[in-house]
Length: 164
Ligand code: FES
Image (cartoon, rainbow, N blue to C red; front, side, top):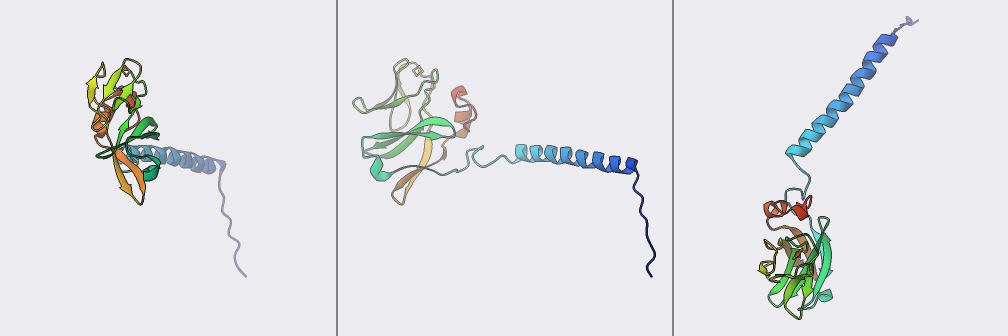
């Protein structure tokens, strides 16, 4: 016959175990936050996060398509030299700029800011700096947004907070 074994767990011991588990949960959350800080999620530092913008046929030469990139308005342009993509939030006061084919510019209606559709550079008006460039790739008949060309530049524009 087997001997009967009795294990006694006191209320105090159960309380200590529960406190230990709670402490472990808090500690794991803190460790996760530290790891997230040290190694941010994909896209947070401008890494590739491929987003399909449009099929090539959808945006013929001379036309454009609006899309969202990292939570911000953006514009895809099909120029004679190829596709271009930019953040469409104006660097002046944050209005949304758009393609104006009759003038061959990206235009901000708020204070008449004008941007070069090939480079995003300011042509005229009050915007202090260019529209940020989005790296794109054309493959399998479609255009994909990859990442901000210059994430540090995007982070320097207040209207793009959280986008890079
Ligand atoms: S907000 Fe675009 S020109 Fe002022």
